[in-house]
Length: 157
Image (tube, rainbow, N blue to C red; front, top):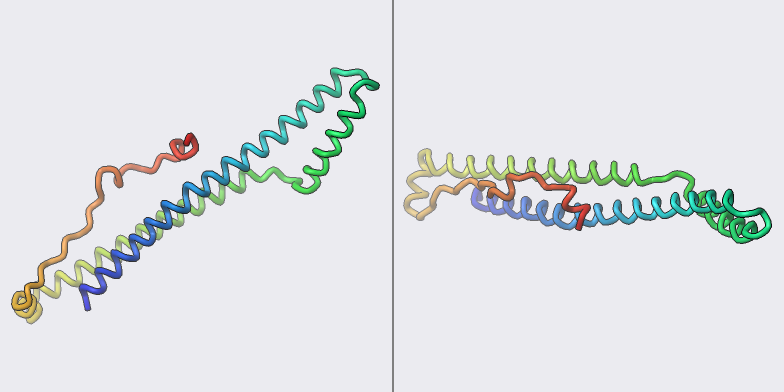
């Protein structure tokens, strides 16, 4: 039963690692795309204002007016620039993912401790020795895992 608890803890931890590896890069992609969209909208507005002031009223007025109407429709549909909320969502999701992984690691360590304690005390030590049960090793992080995930690297991909 205790060995099953350890296997369950390993499986839960793996599920969280998979979730993080799927979730975080996808959220970064969404934030990057949204940021680019907002940048393009702001650049269009700036260009329209510049072209409106640089041209005579008669030559480019209808073209500028048409483009301005299109942008105003976009602004009315999306009145707030939302890149900051996308960044907040990314930050929250990333933090939540890391907290879940940390909690799962604590559960795994507790499961291993419980199992090893059972093999160290009577009658578990006698029964365990007769059936060849060995103490479980704690999961140690690799050097790569000990390093922080670099958000800048994810944004520059």
